[in-house]
Image (cartoon, rainbow, N blue to C red; front, side):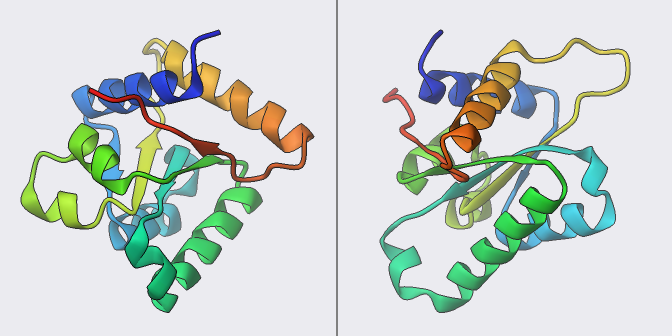
Length: 140
């Protein structure tokens, strides 16, 4: 199996090409509140800012709890800048790439194999009591 980081990058790029990405803490919270069944995967990005930002830590705790309650796979990445490079196409997205959601593909469309590998990775991590595993994104 390829590395989880490579699978995550592929899943993000596939979702982006199909307009199934939501970037930003507040935008993600809105989607989760309005239509939690549409959310397939959640990525939380931590950086130096995270350590000092109590509000962001509280948002992350709430997002994690929501994901656990709704059976949404969730991972952490430590390089928010790299995540923003992969998913960001607008300046404001680069600033708030702390949370990225991948929504489910449209009915009848093909499942994303990279996303399936990530779900299996998360499932295996949960069996090992690693509830929010950390993934390293590959370099360019």
